[in-house]
Structure formats: structure tokens, C-alpha cells
Amino acid sequence: DSGVTQTPKHLITATGQRVTLRCSPRSGDLSVYWYQQSLDQGLQFLIQYYNGEERAKGNILERFSAQQFPDLHSELNLSSLELGDSALYFCASSVGAVGYTEAFFGQGTRLTVV
Amino acid sequence: EDQVTQSPEALRLQEGESSSLNCSYTVSGLRGLFWYRQDPGKGPEFLFTLYSAGEEKEKERLKATLTKKESFLHITAPKPEDSATYLCAVEADDKIIFGKGTRLHILP
Image 1 (tube, rainbow over the protein chains, first blue to last red):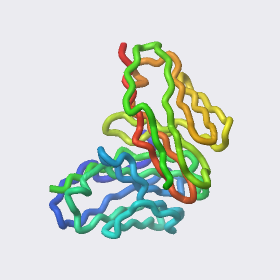
Image 2: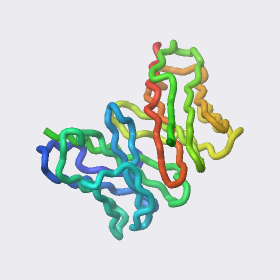
Image 3: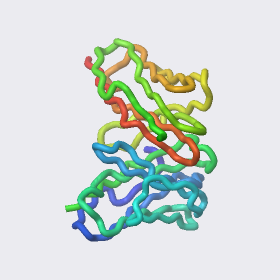
């Protein structure tokens, strides 16, 4: 158990809908990272938050947004969903902000868009 | 373009047969290189961080090394429980780029 909790584990929704994925980082970790993993693209970095502030942005679509709350949990919002958004979404957390350091991953949320 | 390439894509070894996995990278401003292990349906599990050329890290049957262009993950006398996908990632200029991984299968 990495200590990073993601909910829900599975999500099935229709095209055009909006969903919210939730992540609770390990106790004491201030950074949260979001990733998308699909069979053809591998693991893609989406965005990083550190202590409530956006710190780094990767290949995140404009239809996707994220935030980190004062209690350090984070949510990833996916809207206007398309079939191609079906993937595993992972959250990871680490202590620091500068330099990736040792990051711990949650078990992921499997999103299926039908 | 920043890129991380892992080879081979898949590798089957007999138990006890040592080998190496390769991760080559083309990035500017490398801050660190990371190795992860991922089991099917689970999140990646952190293994190593390497920061500079010449650095080596070891953990049980695994040893990671780093040069200016690539990293190797050496697996010595592997066991069936070492079967997994091994992912390499680099951090450069506030981006984190993962390779597509090497699927390793150790036959008993």
C-alpha cells in the first residue's frame, strides 16, 4: 500500500459527460501529480500541484482541469468526455516540489467512456 | 523533441538468467532519471532515482546505472516474482516524461 488513495476505482460514463476523480496524497506529501495511462500512449504526465498551487503542466487537454485543496487532496475534472479519454488515471504524491524525488502512486481510476 | 525510449519492448528470461533493460533519453536540462516497476492493474512502484552520469543504485537483484545518454537496469539471477513492466522516466525542465516500458517475464 503506497498510502495514496484514489476514488473511484472504476468509472463508466457516456460521451459528453463530466466526471471528477479524487486523490488523497500520502500523509506529509505536498505535491500531487496526475497521469493518464493508455495502451498506445503509455504513461502521460498531465499536471502537478504543490501545496495548492499549480507547479508544472504536461499534456493536459483544455477539457481537463485539476485543483489541490487546502487539505492537500486533489481532484481531476474531465469534461466533454470522448471515447479516446478511456484510460487509467493515476495520481502520485511526493514530499517536495523542486525535483521529482521519490513519488508514490495510487492504484488508479479506470475510466471507460461509452 | 524530448524523448525517452525503452528497449526491448518485451523480454522473456529463464529464472536465474541475468540481463539488462535499456532506457535512452534525449532531453535538455535533465534533473533526474527514475525507474519504476508496474504490475498489471496497479500503480507504478518507485525503484530508483539517478541524478548524474556514473551514479549507480542497487536494490536486491536490481542495479540501475546512468550515463549521459542512457540508463540500464540490470537484473541479476531473476526470479518469477520479478515479472512486471519496468518503466523509466526523466524529469527535465518541469516536464516528466515516461518511456513505454519493458515487459519482463521470468519463466520458472
